Amino acid sequence: MSTKKRSLPKVENVEVAEFSILDLPELTLECILGRLSPAGLCNMVGVCSSLRDRCRSDHLWERHMKEKWGRVIGQAAFREWQWFISLRKNSGVLDGVKSRGWLGSLSCMWPISWLRSKIDGGMKPVSSLPIDSTMSWYLSLESGKFWFPAQVYNREHGHVGFMLSCYDAELNYDCHSDTFHARYPPHGRRTMVIEEGVQWERLRAPPIDTPAHELHVSDCLSDLRPGDHIEIQWRRNKEFPYGWWYGVVGHLESCDRNEHLCRCHNSDTVMLEFNQYTPGSRWRRTAISRKDHREAGNEGDGFYGGIRKLHSKEEIVMWKRLWPTDVLE
Image (spheres, rainbow, N blue to C red):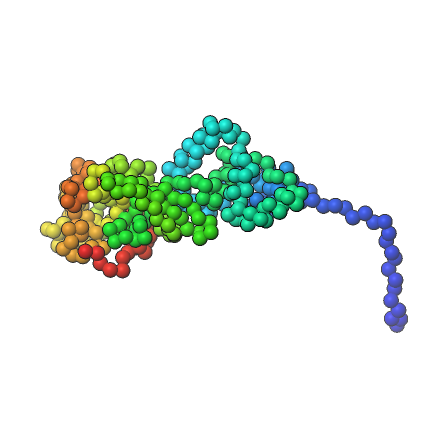
């Protein structure tokens, strides 16, 4: 059997067809863009005008907004963003952010020297980004240019006076440390407090749309039973904003705590317990009226406001995870 190799014919003058990502079927291209990270989408924006428009589309950025910011961005933050957009438009920035602002936003994700080299090396400058786009909102949050309202658990680095509470604050993201600055509004004779290094796990979007200085209308009083988990508004005096404090519904003094004989849910009085405080502490228990509760308290013990009954297991687990290591006095 012959082992002589056969020579393949030479092919000359073959034209290799050029292929562009834009030649892909529409559904395939959308699938690829949908899998890109925010950094990847920003890179693709500078390739050509067609990819620029595709990569800035809201439906691509809404997923990234939800994945990164969804837990801390609520209706209050969205309203603040709409107000910010309106202010920018009314100040003359009608079509979007200037290129310098665009570079400032991206510099938190890539070194500014890299961005400049891309532009100085011949890449066309990125055209203005519409300020009312989801991408603009994402980059404004990422760069720390946008302060937004949210709530912080155990404020001021877990100061003992704020354990198992959650207070309104304005937040600003630091992309270098992946933490936040929290700006607590001044109240009474106290000046504004700024806390740095606030971790993601200490933040939440406000669960209800009640401003910190307004009384929440309690709609759960008739349903409260011993063992229910609650949050209640509390403030030191009338000048202070409310914070939300975690507690549970307890039994009345007259109840023998037998689950089959307990009639606490039929009483006009609801006993609330804050078991993070030592037995005998004046903060351990308080009673409220089930029928006509609005705000109860005094200048010595503070004022108890509206109540939320917690139905979400995630909310309850979050409070228990923040439980102090030492019983409070």
